[in-house]
Length: 269
Image (cartoon, rainbow, N blue to C red; front, side, top):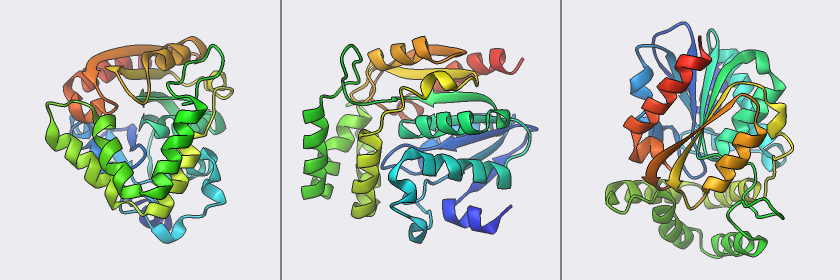
């Protein structure tokens, strides 16, 4: 394993198996968010989790605003991690913004992947004509302005809404604390890159079998987005979990793993 890559992305590996399952977290999070889901795969896969540069236990000094001015920089990091740490075919499991990072990586190097699992994906957050991304230009502008003015205040108000599941206050608090631990300057830059990104044109270019895993009530990625992806993403399967929030891998891990298992039973035949 390349020590540079391992340190840069705080790579952690466990489990057994001839194939590697890679877990990539969403905005404001880190790899600990996979602790409810990843153990279900330790006996069948070599499991690999990591932190995006600028998040969690990654090397913050490696954060380059030019490199990470688009999601392509993170996709390049992912491919470096696979080259350094993965064995056998790769099943990529991404949450939120990392679903698009994974999609870009599957376009750049499709031969490295056997399947991709998209948890709460969105190729574009902004409504555009018939495309319903969930937010208007004004919504996103206001969100980013509020974050710029008071990042901690924004985190305390937005994180619970993003997590959802009002009956699970401990998860809402965990996501809030995760948001607040991030370096505000890096988080604000990453937010702009995330919420202003538009990868709809890239969606049809990914031919790696994909599971689109969505919650029935998601503030960040509404059902219209999952349906759009399913129509435009080749070899895709759409599965809706009856759950409120954007983080089913935390709030509904059993339902999530069941859907993933059903998908992989077909994709890995």
